Length: 319
Image 1 (tube, one colour):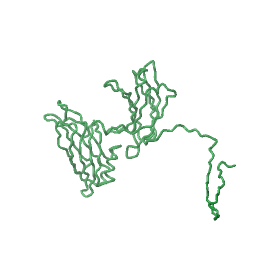
Image 2 (spheres, one colour):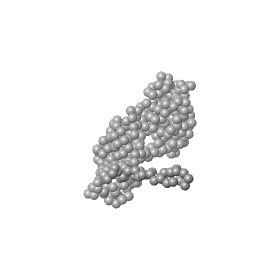
Image 3 (cartoon, one colour):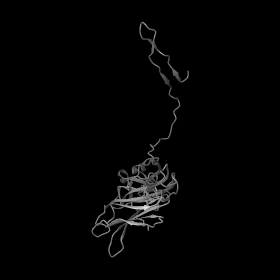
Image 4 (cartoon, one colour):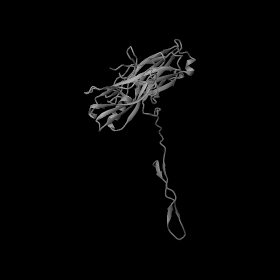
């Protein structure tokens, strides 16, 4: 008998005067396969990829060795759909203000990097293994700043298990755009004006440069290349680390040119009698990556709409 069988129909008269019948049940039974196929355990795919590592604890040197093997299925951060990933590792919680951070090399132009690099954390006692954890954050390397690509956290007690090789599901980035110095910008390509309209909305958590614990920030911005060589700057917001500007600036350009241009913004602390202090910078455009690239491309793809987003500032000064 075939494993797929069907029982005969069971018919029942509906009444004494008729010959009509009703179908009481139709059932199909599918036999379970006798051979069970074992598959490796899978990790739910959240869209951020996976990371493979090895952990080992050396009691004689009070050290934890972390071998970062490889990552798979990372998100693409540049216009080619690829990334330049590296890993930043840290033992948490920190001891006071001391930060025990290490990083791997950068592997260029890939979504499936092979790191095969071992990093050592010293000064880790056996008791630390019970309550401390290893945080691994993947970044996309970029000369205009580093965008987070995903992260994972592992309890150090995993070092004591065998085997110690782990495959970790990366979760969403831990919020690089919500902490640290940053700017809120709005971009809109106005088809009637044939111009890019940039609104400097506000800043947050800017560094203090003055003895009073504040700064007097303003923003400079320009488009490059720009045949009109326009340069703009906002007003100065005195004694403020979280300034609100809501100031609008217009750059005449064509949509076809935007795909080859970059918008550079630099934030400064106003000083008199000496050079202004640099607070941070931001570049959006054809050569940017990640969130900055997406913000720029959304502006091009969807003109006559306001596209607003927070962006972290980098400490690289762009002229």
